[in-house]
Length: 172
Image 1 (spheres, one colour):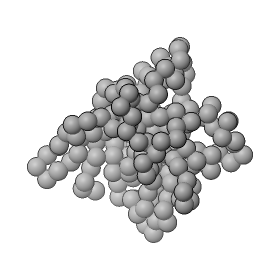
Image 2 (image 1 turned 120 degrees about the vertical axis):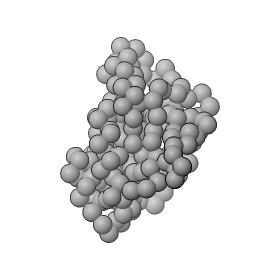
Image 3 (image 1 turned 30 degrees about the horizontal axis):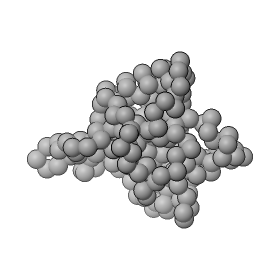
């Protein structure tokens, strides 16, 4: 069965981080990359069983898997599974979690690298209600991925969209 490691970058996100972490039950591991939070962000992350690492200049989300798993080489990290990148304001819907579980079980029977990446649709909270972002965002990539745009994978046109959505909350 394929494995998934969620990577979230935080700074003073204690009020919203728990909501995000509660929805990551389809993930095998969670890595929180902290940027020097002054609130309870690190405590919340550890309460949910996340590995917490400090942000390093120039590091990619794939690099943080290495930092979180001390002693691994880049080649060994390839066996660590796929990387799911989230913002701490985002949560995985039950439908998306079910799609992730289904993908993990099917990937174990075949070639999990058959697709180069996977994408999800995003619903964003507004004062008027939920707004659907019209294009899927690449968020699930293999550990060998090297196309990053900040904390997230660069858009991959060939990424397969999984069923379900990410919810982005604006209000804590």
